[in-house]
Amino acid sequence: MTDTPNSGQADRDTTSSNVRAAIIIFLTATASFALFGSADIVSMSYDLPENAWTLPLVTAAERWHAAMEALGTAAMAQGIRDAIAGLRAIGWP
Amino acid sequence: MLFPTADFALFFFIVFCASWAAVARPDARKLALLVASYFFYGYWDWRFMALLAVSSAINYTAGRAIAAWPGPRARKAALITAIGLNLAILGFFKYFGFFLESLGDIMVMAGLERDLPLLQIVLPVGISFFTFQGISYVVDVYRGEVGAAKSPLNLFLYISFFPQLVAGPIVRAAWFLPQLDETPELTRRALCFGLCLILLGLFKKMVIANYLATELVDGVFIDPGGYSSLELLIAIYGYAVQIYCDFSGYSDIAIGVAALLGYRFHRNFDRPYRARSLQEFWRRWHISLSQWLRDYLYKPLGGSKYGRIATYRNLAITLLLGGVWHGAAWTFIVWGAIHGTALAVERALREWRSGDAAGPHTTGRGAWPLARAAGQVLLTFHIVCLAWIFFRAEDFAGAFVYLRQLGRFSGDLVVVTPFLAALIGITLLAQFVPSNSVERLARQIEGVPIAFLAAGFAVALLAIDLVAPEGTAPFIYFQF
Image (cartoon, rainbow over the protein chains, first blue to last red):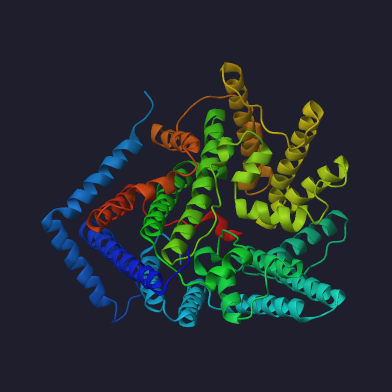
């Protein structure tokens, strides 16, 4: 079977469609991380070098985390972490 | 820049979008990937970007010279010069300090104490990997297995491509360079395959390797005298699992990231702890290094062509130098010596029993063949674990304390919890799942609507982040 100009165009279209799909997947993962990993975002913002540019980022991260705490997603994430900590603490009978 | 960090996630998102946006302009795409790769490397220490460029320039020039020069002697001279320069760079950064230290020790023992120059040489991340790629390129050009790269862009990108730059897999030019001349594609299966591998690699590294390192292995190896024999035994199983998950996790992520950019790498690990012999272990562990050592060291030494003694010698030399490749320390040399000796003994036993050095394992059904296979797997695993003690120990003294304490047969379990034991047990059992499980999973989910794929990936990623211990430990193989 030989490639035709149309098959090349079809490959390009398939690739473009899958690239868009990958971008949707990455953005969804970022959004879920922002919702449930707000404590980590605050922690990361504290690791930034302290200057006039990063100060607003730290404030925004703290506000975002406060909003997620009010929404309950931060507590859910903490609940999972506590459950894992409980598993780790189990000793031998 | 470490893979499991927000920095890398942002970096990769930008590179992914930019590279696919430029897919219709191949040179622009390759240039973008080259700039991204140098940025990735310079993120550790920008000064070493020059070293990477010099290494690439040496190999590019040598490849062109080997291809262009007419006489065999001139071509051989170009090859030897290139290999010599590659090894000189590697030797200076990786072994010069060790050499001075060992020389100093010998002089003290001989009563000739002298103040030798003290040089604090920082080891550039991934130098062993990109040096080996460079050597494989010039040797393959010399052997006629790959054409010399005409475009410096292709060669520079081959040496520095960021997914495999700092910890492999060691990709062959004959495999990768032709891919740079094709128009890359992202099929739905490649997308699913890449995402599955990234998740698997993150789980191995962030959850299994990091828990075992922080809650068991690191503490036990700092003070092995303070633990019971049973704990030491489980800790060495723990280290076997940790280093496997750490290194194969990195390889999984690297292969997955490359797949998302439209490039294919071979697998670097294939369930090594199910191996029934050392020979089989080395076909499953760090496959790209094993093949490199086979093709560029063992075979040029003569391989198995010149009789038994020469074969055993070649095996021992190859594994010994494989140990030295890992680092400038006597503990790595002993690690390589254990593997080299065990391989030679294994081969001798096989020859003695069947007269067939490369004969297959006995197969068959029933209790006896199964018990025999289980015994072979256990024996191989424990030889590998014995060697891991030297690989992980800070020095000889630490390794010997570990071994002595291991022989005292005390059985308290304080530091080993059921959680850690489960991580070790599950990973070892996972060695017996089918080899193409990820490919099969990718095939099964490629038809799933994007919304579900996105939700599944997000949930899995979040779960890994929530289950993993806090902080990001560097990958073990970065130091090599």
